[in-house]
Amino acid sequence: MKTMMLMASCLALAVSPAAALDQEFAAQLLESAKNIERDAGLVSTALKSKSMDAGDVRSKIDAMSGDVTKLQELVTRFEEGHPQMSQRDAAEWKQVKEKVQLLEIFHGQKQKLAAGDLSKNRTLLRAHAEVWRAGR
Image (cartoon, rainbow, N blue to C red):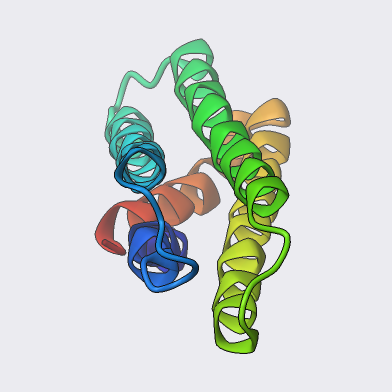
């Protein structure tokens, strides 16, 4: 999770030089990253509870799905609006896209772990949540 939150937090910074982003796009990107970080903190807290509610944990993980999806949509929309970039901007943008893809992969893995035996996967999920939360 730490790596993923670091990637999400750096996402907005990494794309800022790419093709002179407009303020609204950068704000949406940063908002999604912050929401993912917040939700990861809520998951971590829920998993630490001695009286953990599996349904609550799953709903908190699902809450992140919307922001992960929004990041992917932002990436797609930006690419469609900026078909020609300089070589430098294209290289930086490729890194952003790869970070969003990694975020999606890690989130999908968390969803799989949460869909299984939550008490068995609790420690691993908690570690994932802590990494995301601490990574900013």
